[in-house]
Image (cartoon, rainbow, N blue to C red; front, side):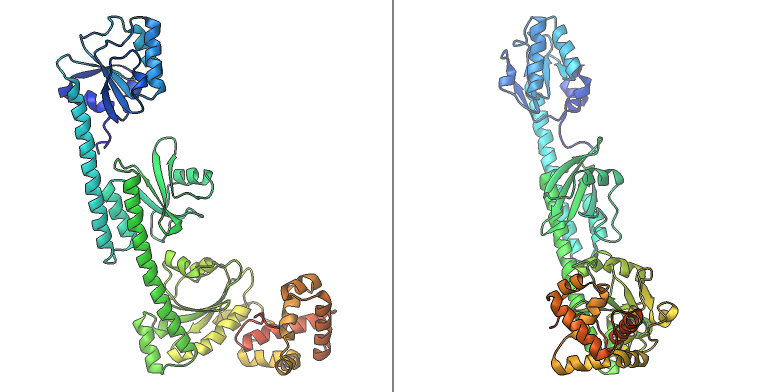
Length: 500
């Protein structure tokens, strides 16, 4: 594709302009902003960056040293080059000018006597008009692509269309990880990852980057600072074009997020209805089928969100194209998945352990599946993040194997403590659980509970008295710990909910 900016090389390539390069071949690709005729002894006072000096040679000094200074001053103000009319009034000896121009890579052109300087000016004006026309057409194409995108073209296909519209490479990425914003999008080339990483975290709305060979524009999308677009390789690219691209992509992301949030809301309502048995079995089966979760191929999953879980797991699911029905209650996330998805991908997105139920089978089995999930989750370990109910006993064999056994185990050891909490409105079960989770550290446990250490000492002694178990010996610690895990399984929930 022909460059959209007019350069010195374009003048040389235009046969009608009858111009040749005298010296300074290194600068032949310099873009020209404008042309200016100047016959003064110091044109640098009147010209600037990107200008082409046109002269009959009147102002060029006769002295060799002064010729060198003449060229140096032009270079200092970043004049793009100079054009001398052939057989006009330039000095016969231009050796000083040639030598300095060659040294500095400053283009010096010789134009045939018959060519008026106005012809060069018209060529630049025509090129700028052509470039502007091309930009306008590109903007029209961009918004035509945006219109097509509203018909559910998809982010990946839309990005490919936008790339073709401006004849450039476009990459959409997450600013922290530099990974593709959504599954299926092309990753940032390694060289651009390294350039962006060297700048630190992106905190700018717009930047220009160089990898040593080429240039790229980077812009955060409006309203989504964690998402950015990198554009490179296109001659149409400038701030205006990039802004249009970013706007089109931002609109598409908002549309996709709106659809995702609507699906999540509907899914959350359905999961809540299933958990609370508000639907008949027929209605439950029909709703699940309509949403693409046939009970015969669907599993229920429970995740206990911890500090490592992303704050916006909904956005993470959208980016990784994870299709689920989910309902969050506090730190617990209940998820319906179908067709044996990759539980590893789900676990990676959430960063926490998962308990997986047996196949759902029928819609009204959701409450039972939830208990299976919690039993499986109780058997998870750091090395075993995803546990299926059907093989939950492969590890942590000391935990109960079913809900009845879980209830019996916890009632036998800490049933009296649970009854005391229920009768007096206390929270000794939570105190015990946190104390053991903190490896019986008085200071850490008191901090978590937001109580004075002496208050904690009093509570622990009272717990020992009620349960008849000592927390100073291994047997007591083990019995109480297993009882707490069994209670968590039997009562369908974590024991650390805030309380008194």
